Image 1 (cartoon, one colour):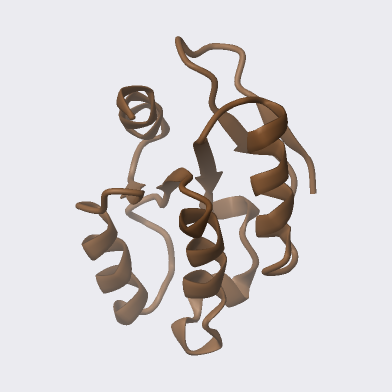
Image 2: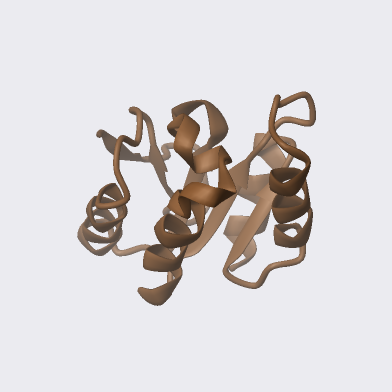
Length: 117
């Protein structure tokens, strides 16, 4: 998994730019946040494994929990047309109001929120 600092933001935000393959990848994100002196993380749906979208696997919950336990602010970008279960849509809907993890349909909105954190 590869993580980089976004070059186009007022405050430092790291983004995952290579596929997440395991829950333990969350620890790489935590490490990268410390290395880059930021607590802001951008995740895109297309880089998350299929298990992330199947709530019964607990992947999404455990992965995000590891990040927020380390006090990271995480913005997930999940397009409206993403083919997921109704339960996952409910999870994403609830996350639209989260304090440390929020979901967005558009990347620009996600970055704007992260910059205010």
